[in-house]
Length: 242
Image 1 (cartoon, rainbow, N blue to C red):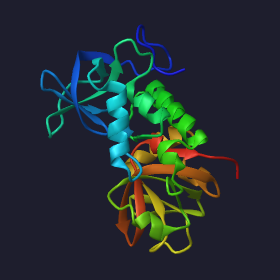
Image 2: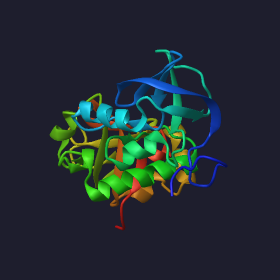
Image 3: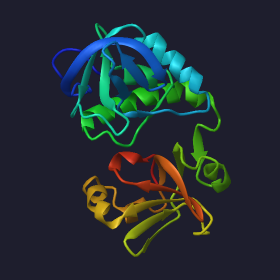
Image 4: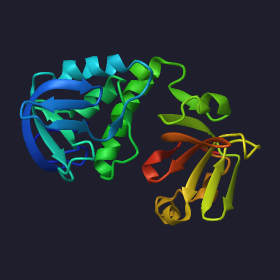
């Protein structure tokens, strides 16, 4: 079960209350403007897929013209003046984010710090992925780690990649999870030395991932081959046994 309006339970994203308002406009697939002028950026999700109009249409259907309550860790606006929040339509049991994820109109982002909230959003995304809804109906929704050229086409975009870690090596302060034999051309996920303790605490030490199938998510960059930098444990998911 996902978020419920009322006392916060173990599976919800009801963080500290950050106000309320009525939705005056849907800016894009993950942004709303309230009647009082505030622009709200939906926390915890990223846009995915190539059809951005679909996400905006879905968000309009869920929240357009509705009264909403906002929850979050703080209400400080970002550099663009947008307030990040988890949004609940009045009377709804689920956050707007969860509804978008369940419809396959968004991806879980990598920056959800609350574990219960992250688990709830991940479960909602899994519903759409299993049913191949929205984004997940596209064959390119999850990139294959063995196809670095395909991953390179997503440079600068939030992307999900799956594959088997063939080797783990350290170069200076960076640990590389290599998905191919050619380190300069094939896909790799990178972890900074300062982040390693967090992964080890979650029983995800880099060496334990060797020969495991994993799913990683984040913004694709290129340093020879395509790369995703892992800054948080939530960016990595072990998919099965060796």
